[in-house]
Image (cartoon, rainbow, N blue to C red):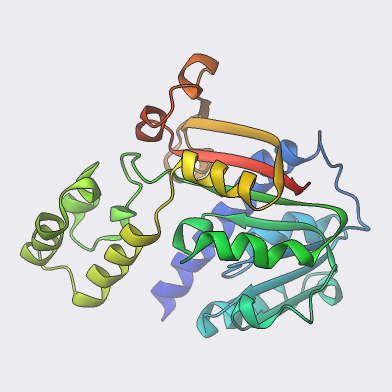
Length: 262
């Protein structure tokens, strides 16, 4: 339990760092964040992404269906000077429609949309949660990028460092994971990500067909989160290469979007 807590402490700090240094500066030129903001994070985990907003005095709500993560979130924030401004809810976001109608200036989702089934339905579902003028920030790894299958979570260290293995035909991918001794639970998690992984093109099609417009976007050759995790300097994909449809999914490690209802 102690080791797990240390790992979650590190993950919390990584989330806080990336949100503070990269996500908020990405949002601010389009929608300046103030302490009057109400913010919802879907898939909040322990809440590290929300700490910079809470430090600014925003009113923050986090929703997650992992009881252990919500417990840690409440523990991490219990002594924060703005603790009265943050609420963590253990539930499925689909149970929140009536409670959250036109409540938020910003909905925040980083590394979440690629885990959600039926993303078309989801993007329609969350739209009424925004106040007039509200926006949604989403950051996600395109499915075909070297580690778009999240294989870095594998227990086998060698396999966790192999790029593009998630693009193998399903029987080969499953067979490789079983051969190296990955537990069935982990294999099922990885195969579920295979089902829900999203490309840049599919995301932009959902945005267009579900009544949103893109206010800002950025694509990264080196994910901003890699700075705190691996000491790598974030690097954006050049303008020429962002226009290479489909192919850009293979070298974009993270895509940032700020969208709003039309």
